[in-house]
Image (cartoon, rainbow, N blue to C red; front, side):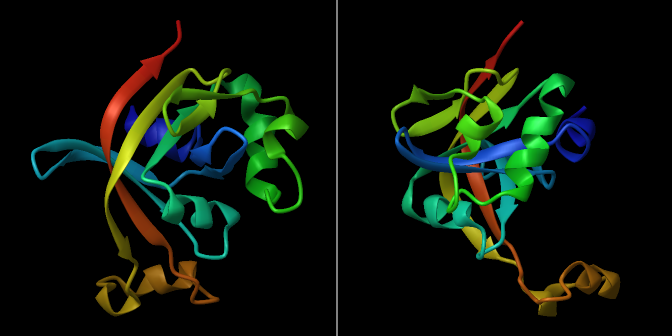
Length: 155
Protein backbone atom coordinates (compact mmCIF):
# COMPACT_ATOMS: atom_id res chain seq x y z
CA UNK A 1 0.00 0.00 0.00
CA UNK A 2 1.88 3.13 -1.16
CA UNK A 3 -0.22 5.41 1.04
CA UNK A 4 0.75 3.50 4.17
CA UNK A 5 4.34 3.04 2.99
CA UNK A 6 4.93 6.78 2.54
CA UNK A 7 2.36 8.43 4.79
CA UNK A 8 2.57 6.18 7.84
CA UNK A 9 5.77 4.13 7.63
CA UNK A 10 7.84 7.13 6.40
CA UNK A 11 11.04 7.07 4.37
CA UNK A 12 14.51 8.53 4.26
CA UNK A 13 15.31 10.69 1.25
CA UNK A 14 19.06 10.52 0.66
CA UNK A 15 21.27 12.28 -1.88
CA UNK A 16 25.02 12.47 -2.31
CA UNK A 17 27.86 9.98 -2.31
CA UNK A 18 29.42 7.95 0.49
CA UNK A 19 31.38 10.35 2.65
CA UNK A 20 29.37 13.35 1.40
CA UNK A 21 25.63 12.80 1.61
CA UNK A 22 22.65 13.78 3.71
CA UNK A 23 19.38 12.12 4.57
CA UNK A 24 16.06 13.31 5.92
CA UNK A 25 12.81 11.72 6.99
CA UNK A 26 9.78 12.37 4.83
CA UNK A 27 6.19 11.24 4.55
CA UNK A 28 5.12 13.10 1.42
CA UNK A 29 5.66 11.63 -2.02
CA UNK A 30 4.30 9.15 -4.49
CA UNK A 31 4.81 6.65 -7.27
CA UNK A 32 3.40 6.43 -10.75
CA UNK A 33 3.99 6.53 -14.45
CA UNK A 34 4.82 9.80 -16.18
CA UNK A 35 6.36 10.44 -19.60
CA UNK A 36 6.17 6.65 -20.17
CA UNK A 37 8.55 6.07 -17.27
CA UNK A 38 8.20 4.57 -13.80
CA UNK A 39 8.70 7.52 -11.48
CA UNK A 40 8.58 8.52 -7.88
CA UNK A 41 8.40 11.99 -6.47
CA UNK A 42 9.26 13.58 -3.16
CA UNK A 43 9.47 17.10 -1.77
CA UNK A 44 12.18 18.96 0.14
CA UNK A 45 12.07 22.45 1.63
CA UNK A 46 14.96 24.74 0.62
CA UNK A 47 16.11 25.28 4.21
CA UNK A 48 16.69 21.56 4.74
CA UNK A 49 20.33 20.46 4.48
CA UNK A 50 19.29 17.61 2.18
CA UNK A 51 18.09 20.20 -0.35
CA UNK A 52 21.72 21.13 -1.20
CA UNK A 53 22.50 17.49 -1.91
CA UNK A 54 19.35 16.99 -3.98
CA UNK A 55 20.35 20.00 -6.06
CA UNK A 56 24.00 18.95 -6.57
CA UNK A 57 23.58 15.27 -7.34
CA UNK A 58 21.82 13.58 -10.27
CA UNK A 59 20.33 10.73 -8.24
CA UNK A 60 18.66 10.03 -4.90
CA UNK A 61 17.23 7.14 -2.97
CA UNK A 62 14.11 6.52 -0.94
CA UNK A 63 14.69 4.05 1.90
CA UNK A 64 11.89 2.35 3.82
CA UNK A 65 12.30 0.48 7.10
CA UNK A 66 10.47 -1.86 9.44
CA UNK A 67 8.80 -0.41 12.52
CA UNK A 68 11.83 -1.28 14.66
CA UNK A 69 13.60 1.72 13.04
CA UNK A 70 10.89 4.27 13.90
CA UNK A 71 13.15 6.00 16.46
CA UNK A 72 15.90 6.33 13.84
CA UNK A 73 13.43 7.88 11.39
CA UNK A 74 12.20 10.22 14.13
CA UNK A 75 15.81 11.20 14.87
CA UNK A 76 16.67 11.81 11.20
CA UNK A 77 13.59 14.00 10.85
CA UNK A 78 14.32 16.15 13.90
CA UNK A 79 18.08 16.78 13.58
CA UNK A 80 20.15 18.55 10.97
CA UNK A 81 22.98 16.85 9.13
CA UNK A 82 24.78 20.18 9.30
CA UNK A 83 25.37 19.50 12.99
CA UNK A 84 26.04 15.76 13.18
CA UNK A 85 26.24 12.48 11.30
CA UNK A 86 22.63 11.40 11.71
CA UNK A 87 23.17 7.87 10.40
CA UNK A 88 25.99 7.19 12.87
CA UNK A 89 24.04 8.77 15.73
CA UNK A 90 21.06 6.47 15.24
CA UNK A 91 22.90 3.31 14.19
CA UNK A 92 22.17 3.25 10.46
CA UNK A 93 24.82 1.97 8.06
CA UNK A 94 25.15 3.95 4.83
CA UNK A 95 25.87 1.91 1.71
CA UNK A 96 26.38 2.79 -1.92
CA UNK A 97 23.84 0.62 -3.74
CA UNK A 98 24.90 2.00 -7.13
CA UNK A 99 27.51 4.57 -8.14
CA UNK A 100 26.42 7.88 -6.62
CA UNK A 101 23.40 6.46 -4.78
CA UNK A 102 23.49 6.13 -1.00
CA UNK A 103 20.94 4.20 1.03
CA UNK A 104 21.06 2.18 4.25
CA UNK A 105 21.88 -1.46 4.94
CA UNK A 106 18.94 -1.76 7.35
CA UNK A 107 16.31 -0.63 4.81
CA UNK A 108 13.68 -3.19 3.84
CA UNK A 109 13.02 -1.39 0.54
CA UNK A 110 15.24 1.02 -1.39
CA UNK A 111 14.13 2.85 -4.50
CA UNK A 112 16.99 4.28 -6.55
CA UNK A 113 16.08 7.25 -8.74
CA UNK A 114 17.64 9.46 -11.38
CA UNK A 115 16.32 13.02 -11.20
CA UNK A 116 14.41 13.94 -14.34
CA UNK A 117 12.40 17.01 -13.32
CA UNK A 118 12.03 19.54 -10.52
CA UNK A 119 9.27 22.02 -9.80
CA UNK A 120 8.82 24.53 -7.00
CA UNK A 121 5.45 24.52 -5.28
CA UNK A 122 3.65 27.69 -6.40
CA UNK A 123 1.00 28.92 -3.94
CA UNK A 124 -0.73 30.80 -6.76
CA UNK A 125 -1.66 27.35 -8.12
CA UNK A 126 -3.41 26.10 -4.95
CA UNK A 127 -7.00 25.28 -5.92
CA UNK A 128 -7.88 24.44 -2.32
CA UNK A 129 -7.05 27.47 -0.15
CA UNK A 130 -6.62 25.31 2.95
CA UNK A 131 -3.32 24.01 1.53
CA UNK A 132 -1.75 27.40 2.32
CA UNK A 133 -2.13 26.55 6.04
CA UNK A 134 0.62 23.96 5.61
CA UNK A 135 3.00 26.84 4.81
CA UNK A 136 2.64 29.50 7.54
CA UNK A 137 6.26 30.57 6.86
CA UNK A 138 5.74 30.46 3.09
CA UNK A 139 8.67 28.03 2.80
CA UNK A 140 7.37 26.07 -0.16
CA UNK A 141 8.83 22.70 -1.11
CA UNK A 142 10.64 21.81 -4.29
CA UNK A 143 9.28 18.66 -5.91
CA UNK A 144 11.76 16.14 -7.28
CA UNK A 145 10.64 13.62 -9.87
CA UNK A 146 12.92 10.65 -10.28
CA UNK A 147 12.93 7.90 -12.85
CA UNK A 148 13.07 4.65 -10.93
CA UNK A 149 16.27 2.82 -11.77
CA UNK A 150 15.97 -0.10 -9.34
CA UNK A 151 13.92 -1.32 -6.39
CA UNK A 152 15.89 -3.33 -3.86
CA UNK A 153 14.07 -5.39 -1.25
CA UNK A 154 14.99 -7.55 1.72
CA UNK A 155 13.20 -10.62 2.90
